[in-house]
Structures are given as C-alpha cells and as structure tokens.
Image (cartoon, rainbow, N blue to C red; front, side, top):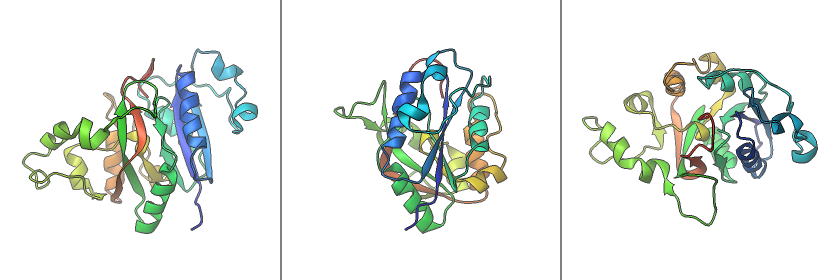
Length: 237
C-alpha cells in the first residue's frame, strides 16, 4: 500500500522539554511519509528560538515562527493546518506522545474503510511517559464509568462498549474523541472550517460534530497514544 502523506500539527507554549518528547515520538513512527509542523504560541522560553531544529532533529522547521494566540488553542491548531501539505492531518499536544505504530495503523484503517476521520484508544497517566509503568486505558478504564453514565437512557447504555464506527448520534451524547488521537482528511477538515475557537474548551467537540455530519469516525480500540493528565506546566494544549 502506498503511504499518503500525513501532516502532524503540534501546538506548543513554554513546554520545550515536553515538546521534544512529542517530536521524538513522531520521528519514531514506523510510518515514513510525514511532516511535522510545530506552532509556537509566543513562548517565552529561549530554547524555542535558539534550538537548531533542522540540524539536531533533522526536521525542516522554522523555529523562529512566533505568533501570540492565547486561549482558546483552536486558533493555534488552525494556524498549523495552513502549512500542511499532507492528505491527512493529525494533532498531537506537546505534552502527549504517540506509540510507534500509531500512524501506520490509523492510515491503514482509514484507507481500507474509506472513512475520513479516525481516533484511537490511549493510555492515561500523569507526567512524562515511562515505558516501564502500567497505565490505565483512557476510554476503557480511567473514564469508562463516567462515560458510560453519560449514555444512560440511550440505546448504547445497556451493554455499553465503544463501537468500531462512531456516528453523529453516538458523539452527540458525549465527546469521547481525544485530540491527540485524531487523524482527519485535510480537505474535509478545511471544508468544515476547522476549529471554531469556542470558549470553555469545547472548540474541539464542535469540530468533531461538524466532521461527523459529513463522515463517520473509524475508532481503533487499541492504545496508540499517551495522554499526560498533569499537562506538564503551562497551558493545557
């Protein structure tokens, strides 16, 4: 199977060491046809401007790019998408990381199902990812009871489990989509206007609903990312 290009959007603010971990997890992917786009949200840490991204990490990144967005963070992600050239775009918060086969599994699923939107299960922890630790699954363990309760009264509740395909009806009840797990067709994402920048951290949810009005979501019930519940330090990207 040919490898369609994937553009990875990583917004970052004053979490430089975490950012390097996120970038390393992308570089370690066994999927080769990808580009990394880091959007620096006016960080004050000097490393964002002094670090030689191209020479050290071997990625062609303009580390001097600087624009002050502030909250909400949707504008930061939208800015990254403007530079994307891939068929697919994937989002990664700077305090999270991906497991090595995430892109390969996700692209194969989307190409085989012809669905233009996908997300995955992941691990939940606090702090930098440690491979020697055991972490709870995000949807199926850490937040399972809370999420199942949200579906009470719906047709999904009695024997609640996560379907392999999520539609608008399923996600309208609760946002089970974690941003660092998302991969979406770039043309579809831009056609719905991207993230709207709504307050109270619901801009991502609004975007998922717009996407699901046009396509279903392929859900991969396999942990392919790590979510840092402590969020490093600074803004919650």
